[in-house]
Length: 191
Image 1 (cartoon, rainbow, N blue to C red):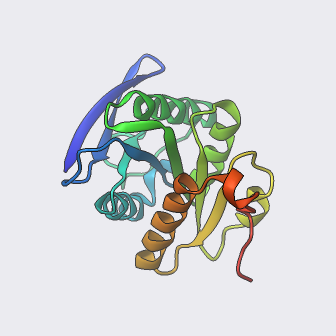
Image 2: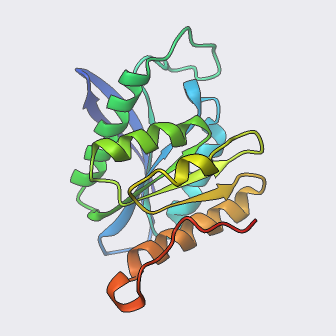
């Protein structure tokens, strides 16, 4: 199910798209998706959010303050501080949303969206995990090592595979008890 939702950030009302799985009666993990500057990866982010939701997760994407209705139009500027505040407001929205387990919230960042989410993870304990969707030109792997929460890098080259990796990683994150299996090194990569 696709819903349009609103929440406040910096005295303004933001609009978001919330995807909720159609067949479930349980409280689910929630995921915030964050794209590139000025919404340039909107189609990729929307596809990923929709497909991950079909796998049993509540997903949220949002239109930031000052992005405007037409995301294809060039935007004159972007304030990193204001964008970070919008992300934090979206995380609080997910935390308070009745169908989301507030102890199972993670985020997926595409391109520079991952950088903003990494900074958000340093400012709040809402995020329990972070997935970076990396394009061939990104240098994401260096940022992953500096996070205090579990994280992984997923290749954006094949979006269907990226969806599978996001879902598998999130299910593993929230279903693995560290006490039983020992510490998990979430920063391992296949190189």
